[in-house]
Image (cartoon, rainbow, N blue to C red; front, top):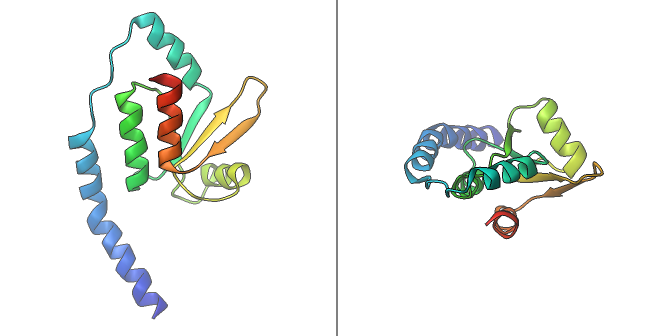
Length: 128
């Protein structure tokens, strides 16, 4: 029975993944225009941020759309396959849940923020 459920959800992901990516492409908003010096300052601040995500996760799509709307150049790290990125997410944040925003301060300390709504609120408060 476990095998049947696993195959059902795997098939469902295969069918829905292209639709999610097309939906993201079609509905992604245009980024806000800033003065070049303001954009450079924000780009420098974004160097301390990384978004751990799955490409077809609807909650990750939601965060990426907001990043695009705010014209933020935050590093996107694909944590879906097993590997060093997923390992970093588990070691640092404690769980393999996405989206996860890694915020590194000037001292090198990291804060791991899960929940798309909380991430979006943080980005809007800091960069909007």
